[in-house]
Image 1 (cartoon, helix red, strand yellow):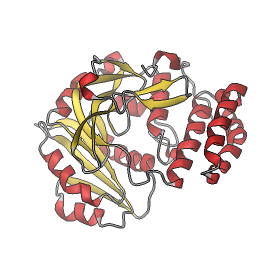
Image 2 (image 1 turned 60 degrees about the vertical axis):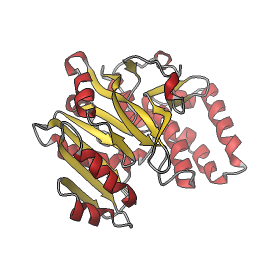
Image 3 (image 1 turned 90 degrees about the vertical axis):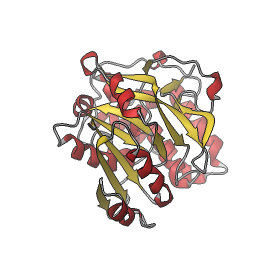
Image 4 (image 1 turned 45 degrees about the vertical axis):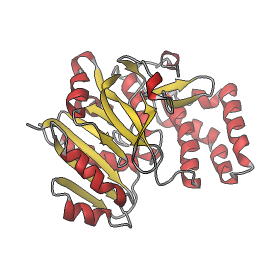
Length: 316
């Protein structure tokens, strides 16, 4: 009997990965109830391949790149329209699941206890999708020294990891299981994932909003999967601009502009950006947005709920 979860995958010129991804999901035990695929206007034949070679996948072929956040929102809407679906697995196209992943991750959900998101143990694949001995992530945490949200344990040797099940700030969007109750609770006008982010930090934003509403995320090391770090926009100007912009946006939105308005945070961000300017002058426009963005978010968005103490989720 299939597990009551939908797996959602967003594609953008990922054609070489599709045979492996299909084989991986077909080997699951239990199988997912639904496999939903959104193609973001790929030019390499992704949509045609899914349409012709992946019979159980429900394809949404979008004519252009709508972004990671908007694509997942469309798939989540489709999943939650089915009353039998209890949760949604956001799965990167360059990630693979262990056979029992759905059973192990699903068992960690506890909506009655406000555990609405599961962070699996994500181990790392190399550029050729071969397994390595490194960790990719064990969840989202906050590095107070750098003022950044980061993937906990990223790059650490698996043999040195002795981390039991426990609460994390949030689940990394590379592979995450969300209960439908959490998704329905955090949905806002801009979606479950905020579509304005396009890509990067949208998973942190969702986790922050969920925490403000009383939801928790759990790290479940018995649920194992694999992920190849970085995608098709690695080291591109587009990626770097999105990363800097969305990091500013994340704090402005969820701290009601306080972080960006404070002299300490402004100085930190100015220094971080200044270090990149000599080699990356295209980031100057991001710096120029800071105060306009902070003022706009203070005016237009009230995060509501309880304040989240980021020091509770250190990068240790």
